Image 1 (spheres, rainbow, N blue to C red):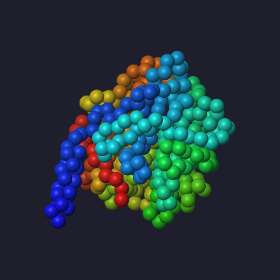
Image 2: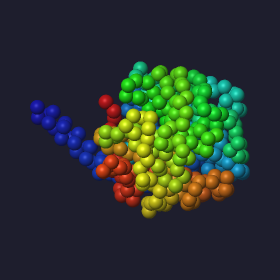
Image 3: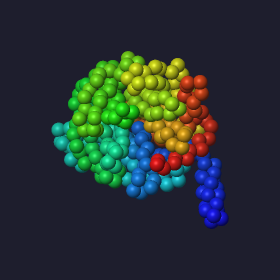
Image 4: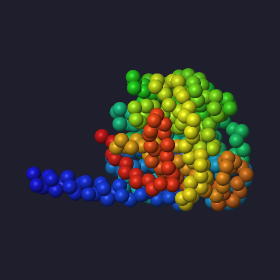
Length: 340
């Protein structure tokens, strides 16, 4: 009994010590291209750590004109072994089998989304552009890949959605079974659309998302917390917040998140492209910033590496009176707890 009690006390002390250390600002910068963006964080069951997937824009590569630096991008990986407090580079996602007519000779990979199926298989949904281009006028598909280890990914299929220019998938397990994906349809004023699947393989497009679709944005992220389902959308001037009771109809919150610049290092601009981890009853919002510039993101107008580079940040979400808020200038005492 005394040894068990000692173990409990030791566990509590370790937990308190870990929670007492705030996350760094910025949380993470990519050492290769310095262009980490579009973060999504998942638990690695086999390795017992947290893995961050991100679009790795080629911010520091010289001689790239227009938006070529936002193309040719791999999916970077970072790992945390201390509950999200610190992150180290973990290479790149090994993506194989994407057909040449979809990926081209020099593939562009954007905006990863990772979910775990009931059988333990990991599923990656990813925007693919067929090459490196200096402008935005090219097709983009969302593809489906699978993995057993979160590092090696095998191509399964390309989804047939609302248009030939779709980006930023977010996939959510429905309470009654099946899955729903929200994504950005660039052909319709960058509106948010959605599709349904019974098995993560066969998808049926459902059209524009009610309550969200008429407000242009990108990078939708859906999560459940505090008895409600929420959607965050990057509006290029902060993150729009939406709430739903049925995952079909959404109501916008009056106040955006991360629209007011912060005061911490690399955080003095609007926050972009959210990813949320709900853990231990708390919710942590991961986002990226372009610290060298302010206002609306216009990648084609930013030739200097300092203006192109991007950093990952994290902030804790708070809930009161039916609304979400965050204080990006307060220390974030992050402690991601392994899921049961």
